[in-house]
Amino acid sequence: MGFVDVAILSVIQGVTEFLPISSSGHLVLAQTFLGMGEVPVLFDLVLHLGTLGATVLVYYRLIGAIMKDTWLWLFRSGKARREVYRRGNVKMAGYIILSTAVTGVIGMVLRNTIEGFFFKPLFVSFFLLLTGVVLFTTRFITVGEKSIGDTGPIVPVAIGFAQAAAMLPGVSRSGLTIATGLYLGMIRPLAGSYSFLLSIPSILGASIVEFATSKESLYALAVGQETQSILMLGIAGFLLSLITGYGALRVLLSFIKRGKLHLFSYYCITVALGSGILIVGYY
Image (cartoon, rainbow, N blue to C red; front, side, top):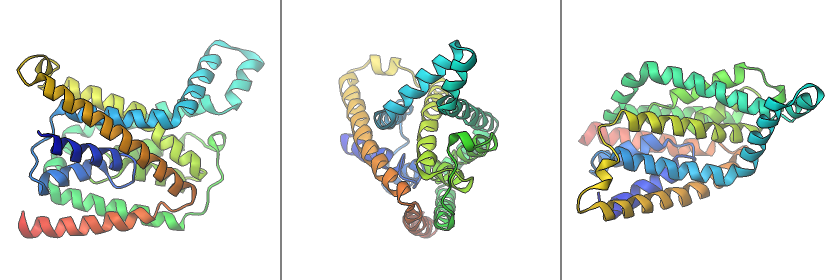
C-alpha cells in the first residue's frame, strides 16, 4: 500500500465516518473501482482512531462534563446526588452504555453474516440507497423538543438497533442514528451529539474485537526492513483521517442544526444508483 492509497483511504474514512454517507460503503466501493486490495486490519484501526480523535476534539468539554458528573453521582448521596443527576449528563452516560450494549449483542450474534456483505459490492449500493431514502424522509420530521431528561429508555434501545443496522456496509451509522433520534423527538443538537458520543465506545469496542480476532499482530510492525515506512504511512493516515474527520464533523453539525440532513440523501442515492449500474454492467 503506497502513500496515494493511504491518502485516498484516509480522506474517505475521515469524511464519510461523520457525513451520513457510509464510511464502510465508500471504502468497499473504492476498493472495487480503484483496484485497491483489502485494507490491512492494523491500518483500518489507525484510520478509526483518527476519526475517534476528531470526535474527542469536538466534544471534549461535554465528555469531560459527563465523566465528572458520573463520578460525582457515584460517590455522592441524597440531595447532592439528585442535583448532579438533574443536569442530564449521568443519564446521557447511562443511555450511551445501553445503546452500546444493544449494538454489541446484535453485532456478536450477526457478525459473520454482516461480514459477508463486505465482499458483495452490489449489496453495498443497495444499502447506500436505503440510507439515502432514510435521510430524505428526515425533511418531513417535525422539529423535536425532547432534551435528554425528557426521553425514556426506548430511545437508547432504538438507537442501539439503528447503530447495529449500520454495521452493514452502505448503511450510514451517523445518518441512521441521528435520524432515529430525530424521529423519536430529540432536539436536533442532542440527536447529533448523542450519535457522535455513542461512536466513541462503539469504535473502541469494534477496534478491540477486530484486532483480537485478526491474524495480524503488532509483531508485524516490529520486524522487517519496511518498519519505518509502515509507521510513517500509519502516522500519515491517522493525521489525515483526524483532520478531514474534524472538518466533516463540523460541517455535519451545522447541517443538523439547520434541519438540512436530508440534503445528503441526494448524494447517497446518486452514488448508489451509479455504482450499482457499473457493478451490474462491468463487474
